[in-house]
Length: 132
Image (tube, rainbow, N blue to C red; front, side, top):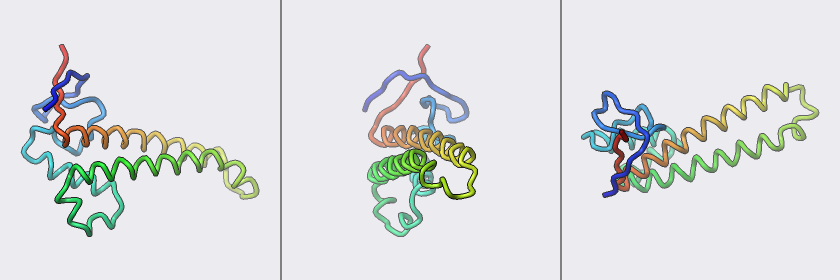
């Protein structure tokens, strides 16, 4: 098991977690960590993931799948942003508002990617501790 120092946010979880840790998921040493991490990941994933028991049975595989799903969404948002002006030139859409929405979506997806990476690392055995 890896234990590394990291800038941390600690609090009621009773354990250190890195900055960017999802608020809905307790720290890795919490008894409900895996159950709540799986629920959190299923909430972020496609609805059909809930129909397959494999994702609940193999949380690390679910984390792997989620990381790729989020990266795909990020690529989609980047592509939409890059092509919005040309694709919507003849539409009456307020391009500035569309681009603003895509920027906000990109920032949110970047945060979700960080959270998913941290959950994947924790499920792989990584642990964090506060730096003095």
